[in-house]
Length: 113
Image 1 (tube, one colour):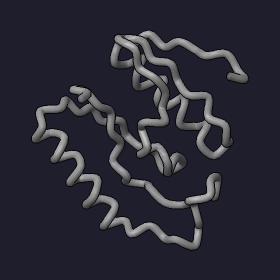
Image 2 (cartoon, rainbow, N blue to C red):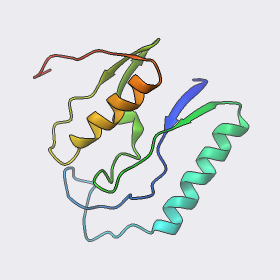
Image 3 (tube, helix red, strand yellow):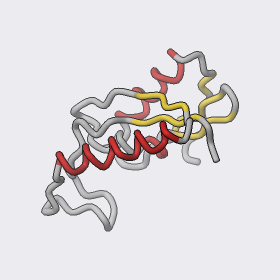
Image 4 (cartoon, helix red, strand yellow):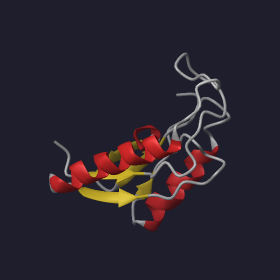
């Protein structure tokens, strides 16, 4: 099991667009429930002794809460994702900035990959 994770509180989480078969704008997000579920996950991971880093979410990046999509971390190197959909592309700069501020080396993957 990993001992260090990156999380993003779903402050601005919503289904603002449809880019995969599971996303339907007609399915409104229950924000209090999403916040509660996120908090329970955070607390469960913390109780297991997992080191949790937090990255802030901006209103223009409602899916940023899915931090597993940020890219790949190998040691102190971060390889940011090349997001396919324009709706998610603004996340990349936020993740790159955060990892640089934490002292990671940021390395690009050629496009298209």
